[in-house]
Amino acid sequence: MALFQAQSDAQLALMDAAARLQGRSLWQDALERFKSNKAAMGGVIVLCLIGFMSVVGPMMSPYRLEDLSWEAISIAPTMDNSHWLGTDDTGRDMWVLTWMGARVSLTIGIMTTIIALLIGVAYGATAGYVGGRTDNFMMRFVDVLYALPLLFFIIILVTVFGRNIYLVFVAIGCVEWLTMARIVRGQTLSIKRKEYIEAALASGVKTGTVIRRHVIPNVIGPVIVYVTLLVPTNILVESYLSFLGLGVQEPLTSWGVLISRGANSLETAPWLLIIPAICLAITMFCFNFIGDGLRDALDPKDR
Amino acid sequence: MKTVLKVENLKVHFPIKAGGFLNSKIIPLRAVDGVSFEVGAGECLGVVGESGCGKSTLGRAVLQLIKPTDGKVLWLGENLCDLPREQMRQKRSNLQLVFQDPLSSLNPRLTVAEIIREPLYATDPTIGREDADQRIDEIMKAVGLLPEMRNRYPHEFSGGQCQRIAIARAMVLKPKLIICDEPVSSLDVSIQAQIINLLRRLQKEYGLSLIFISHDLSVVRHLCHRVMVLYLGRMMELADRDSLFAKPLHPYTQALISAVPIPDPAKERAKGTLILSGDLPSPLNPPSGCVFRTRCLKATPKCIKEVPTVEVLENGHQIACHHWLK
Image (cartoon, rainbow over all chains, first blue to last red; front, side, top):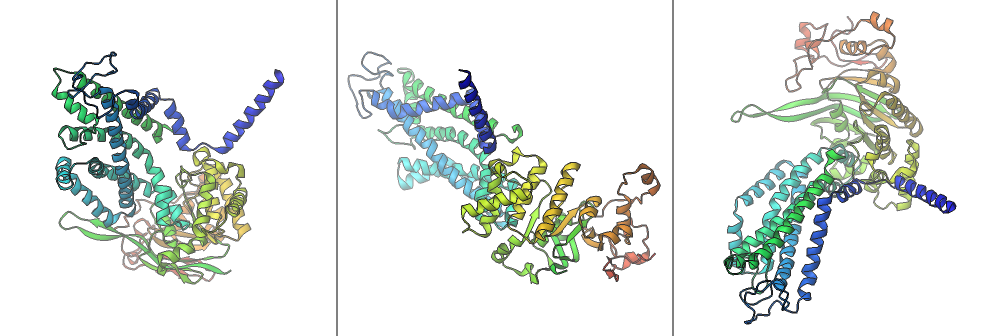
């Protein structure tokens, strides 16, 4: 026993030494801090659960998305006939609808954010790094786009291209990158003057490599925080587009569509509003907690 | 001694917008205004002067990190100012830079090995991983770092160690000239000595030329062969270390040297310090004639009218003053 103890002690010491030589990057430090944040970790777990259910949920029910039923219109949530969350006013199963809606809402939230992220980071980093007249021109272009109302822009897109789900991706993504570009540009301006950039240039590193290796990894902290806050914003934008009838089309559904329809039958069948609204609210909270957690974890003042 | 770097009449002017909204005009800020000097192979040139006199700008202009407005920077006879970007980029392995603040000159997201490897890949993208690793290990040993620390991040090191990493990054390409921009002024005194001795050792071992920018005269005296004194972007005096410290000719140099404390209270009290009155004038609106005349003890009407030319004495001592004989 004693021998075993000594051996494991020696092993531990070795591992410790290895860990010390390996070094801990700022990302690893941030991850440790993030893990110790209970609200943020709770957010991650609940969000994973929602994501998992959006994939598996619809399969758990005996009903399918397209199944209309005259016998089961506006049934309240019950355990009797597998309509666990009740049915809507056309007899579709709310359980299936909610999780299908989750699928669409989360996809839209994440996809639009990725679009915004890619355009925004590339555009902002270039404008900020190049600076001078190019920067001025690029950012005035952003200002012009800012002045364009989102709704107006989307109505034009819908009338020109017709209603489809990809259009929603493009429309939201194309509007939300503006703020991202501004954040990235501001960060880039402050990073650009750092001495390690000058050192890289002095040793002959090319401009593209400098942006990729030195600028972007150092601006990405605040950007990640903004991304986690952008996902729920985009889910909300999608839901108000759907509320106005500009979003996804039946039979495909999203939380926005469900809430908009539920709002119409609030007096007769309140669960049609309450269930998707609760799901949306929980998702928002999760993303916001994660965003807060990331901000605390990545805050350089905390180092 | 072979001359490696020759700087002729170097000028760096920054355009500054002045005036109101309607009558705005662009006036030049003369950060460096007509400085000439030479650096020999294996020589250390000290550049001293108070804050804002253009020391750092001079260093960056030599490396073409700031484009000079006028003048020549001849590297082995080739004018760097005329080179296109890409050709200049390839020349960069010969000329390197070490910064004042060691921590902010290292990217916090990269490991030590990645930081040192970067210049290697930038100048020779085909270099193999093993060759690169070997050179990183060599240079880490040469600057007094354990090669085992190669996978650590800058924030895990002390200031002195960070400066060693920065020196390793500059040295890994085996450059012929390193410009040190106040490399020790943010370190504490014991670490300063270590870094300076390291620079001195590397200089001897590799036959390196150094331009050592500093405002600490004792450090310059310890390390440099020749010293150049800058004031408001202009050269005041350039001389061998010994003749400069033994017998400074320019009134500004005299004031600078008299301000260095002597570590002996009796001598320090007896020495008497020349105290200059007033502040450094604005480089946007420099005084006419000799730029130092507003604070000079020897100033005469002649100094207002005429810009002093640089006189070269027989021992190579260069001085820009009308009244140095007085």
